[in-house]
Image 1 (cartoon, one colour):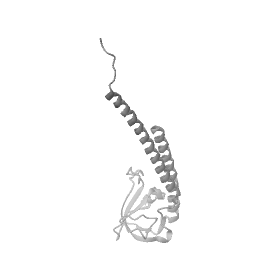
Image 2 (tube, helix red, strand yellow; image 1 turned 60 degrees about the vertical axis):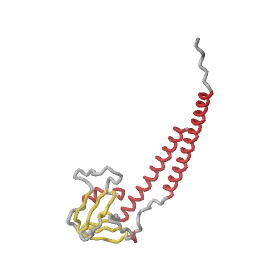
Image 3 (cartoon, helix red, strand yellow; image 1 turned 30 degrees about the horizontal axis):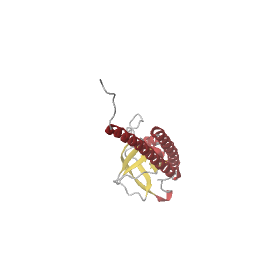
Image 4 (cartoon, one colour; image 1 turned 120 degrees about the horizontal axis):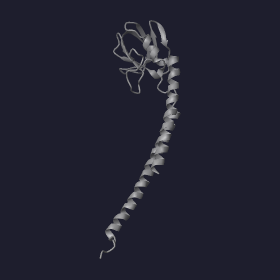
Length: 186
């Protein structure tokens, strides 16, 4: 005759221990989700309070740099960006007599028009931030053969629009991600 199964004290203690452990684990997930939510809200608030022209130097701080265009890269002949990274629309170019590689980003507006106007050997003047001593200064205004093709005001308008758009996109994404994480973890 077979005896009905009766768990011994060690087995009962094992099940009790795992029940406590599972409760602590769930509590830990909730705490982590709350910390993520608070950090996300804080970062979103900081992003939304940052001025839209953040990173854009004042017009008074720009200095002109001139030279013949030695080479430039950016887009292929089909007007499609070569790169697939965040800085998808970036034009880089070198001027004769200067060792810096100047950059013009798509977020500054009209990258295809700028690319089309640049020609090797033409005289180019760029206005860069005087405080930027890096090897890759940003061109905030560009003139080709004495004609301004992208003014500081044009760049400023596009820069502010890009920052405003990206702020709200980031804020919406962060809030949705936090809401989903809270729903999943609770």
